Every structure is written in structure tokens, then in C-alpha cells.
Amino acid sequence: MTTPGLLPPGSTIGIIGAGQLGRMIGVAAVQLGYRTHILAPESGPANDVCFAFTRAAYDDPDALAAFAEAVDVVTYEFENIAADPIAAIAATVPVRPSVAALRVAQDRTAEKRFVEDLGGRAAPWREVDSRAGLDAAIAAIGCPAILKTTRFGYDGKGQARLHTPADADAAWAAIGAAPAILEGFVRFAHEFSIVLARGADGAIMGYPPPVNVHADGILASSALPAPAMVASQWTEAAALAGRVAERLDYIGVLTLEFFATDTGPVFNEMAPRVHNSGHWTIEGAQTSQFENHVRAICSLPLGPTGLTARAVRMENLIGDQVTRWPDLIAQDDAHLHLYGKHEARPGRKMGHVTRIER
Ligand code: AMP
Image 1 (cartoon, rainbow, N blue to C red):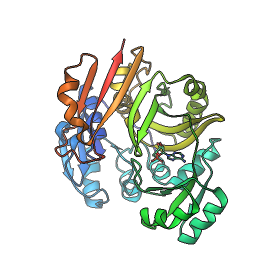
Image 2 (image 1 turned 180 degrees about the vertical axis):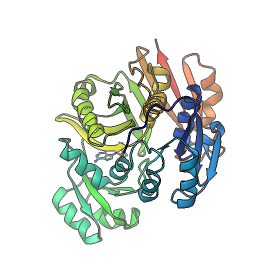
Image 3 (image 1 turned 135 degrees about the horizontal axis):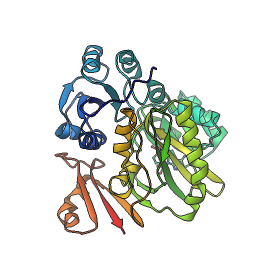
Image 4 (image 1 turned 90 degrees about the horizontal axis):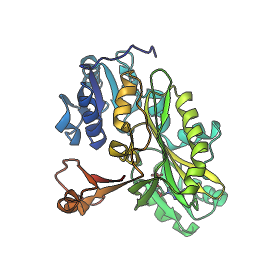
């Protein structure tokens, strides 16, 4: 891909997807004088802050072609979109991060191979493409284990745990008999993530790693500074994330999730985008992940990524936890973010709150 020059403020950033990540990218974009144009099949949280909206399927070639003509750069806020139609518009408009990054990150098998080739360590895993294949994978890896669909998983969806081999039928049915991987269960002390931004000039700025707690496969909280064990595994994990970014000639914000174990960091998965475990950066870092994403894709210099406080803690408001908002907004140290979603369904991310300790 040819690297275009700097996109000046006033340019239009195309965002594929209308969720809360697109909304927060949009807020950062307008702050720097850019406009955003969203493409999504349905309106969502990002529509409240966008300049233009194309309602279309993510794989609608005509709509994508018109979208590509109307914007100056295209980015995406989630990875469960068909890559080929996006590749088709990359000839017209820069797509950042690249379609190559999208292809790797949307396929667990490709992602694990890619990261292992770069020296990363993942939990033991096997591809599973049939019920008999699951038995073979169990024989190789043992239980407990987790069966994960190769594609289209998020927030713990498309996953089933196997405590014993007798759980195989139920697990296979639970993921819809889809192509999958079986992954050995990692006995981790903590989960953490590396969020970094890589600029169009190749400069990398990494954020300090939060310790992440999940409930039912969904991120519940991210807190910094992380415990000493995570801090001691930061350098190795960040170096791996940097190699991933470089190998992909990545432009934008990239996230890698890890388990901190007694024997070092174990790679879990990557996301070619801003990430929920980076929401704390809005108030807790010198430059937010959203602003650095905008800076990167517009070929601006990146901003510094250091902590602005002694401690930062982000909590997601999931489902009806959002009804706590009147209480939260009354607290001096709480920065409340609501995504403007009307219906608080169970498991749905409705907002988050970040607490800063100076
Ligand atoms: P994922 O969607 O792959 O990030 O999985 C969601 C959550 O499930 C992770 O953040 C972990 O809390 C848990 N999990 C996933 N894979 C494993 C594993 N191999 N061992 C232990 N816990 C896991």
C-alpha cells in the first residue's frame, strides 16, 4: 500500500461499524477537527457523533465503493466483517489497519500461527473441524479445555468449556458444530492486555498494561497499575505485540490479550482495533487510545501514552448495571460514559465508568 501523506483536519474518516468503539473514535476525531462517516447495517451508538451514515451490509460492494469515494481513510471498529469486500475498496482509499491485519485477527487459527511464528507462546491448541476431530483434539490436549469457534467469536460467545471428555457432545452442539479450535485451559494468575498504537511512520507507542477481570467471558474491569507479576511480564508481551505490529506493517491501535502465568505471558488473542481494555486511557493516559488511533490512521504523530494518575480503574456497565448511573455520576472520582443504547439486554455493554486516583 502506498502511504499517503498527512490527512489534514477537515478530512473524513470512514468507520465500518456503528458501536461504542466507533462512537469513541468519533468523539476523538471531532476533537481533532475530523468528520466521521459510518457504514453499518443498522444505526448504533456511533451515529450520535457522526457526520454521515451509510446504512448497508458490511459486504455490500456498491455501498462500500460509494463509501470509499466519500471518505479519505477507512478504519473498522470490529473484526467480524468479510475481508474480501474491504480488500476491494483498498485500491480506492487507504484502509487502516490493513486488510491483512483484519484477515489474521478474524481467524483464531491464523492468529495463533502468526503469533507463534513471531515467538509468542499460546495455550496448546488443535484445529477441530468435525465431531471426530474434537475427540482427537481432546486426546492430544486433555481436559479441562475450551472449544472456540475459529471465526465470529466475541465476548466469550462461540465458546464452550469441557471439564471432561464426556462434555464433548454438549460443547460441539453449543458452538453450532462450526469450525473451531480446542485450547488447553490456562491456569493463569491474571489476565492483562497490551494496547499499542503504531503510526504511519512506523513509530510505536505502547500503553502500560491493565490487569483485566472477565465475568462470563465479558470484560468486567481493567485496572492500573497492574500487579507486580504482570509488570514483570510487560516487556516480553509488549515486545511480541510490537513484532506483530511491525510484521503486519500495522497502522492504528492494536490489542493483544495475555494470561500471566508462573512461566511467563501466554498469548490469548488479538484485536486489530481499539479495545475495551483501553477505555481507561480516555482519562487515565496522556493520549487516549481513540485519539492515538485517529492520529495513526491520519498519519499524524502519535501522542504520549503514560499514566496521568497514580491508579486508574475502569468498570464496564453491563446490562442493567447501567441503572447505577445516577449514583455513579454523583461520585467525584467517577467519569461516566454511556453509549446511548436504549435497551439494557443481559450481557450488553451499556457504558463504563473510570475512576482516577491522583
Ligand atoms: P476470549 O474470547 O478467547 O478472550 O475468551 C474470553 C475469556 O475466557 C478470557 O478472557 C478468559 O477469561 C477465558 N479464557 C479464554 N481462553 C482461555 C483458556 N485457554 N484458559 C483459561 N481461560 C480462558
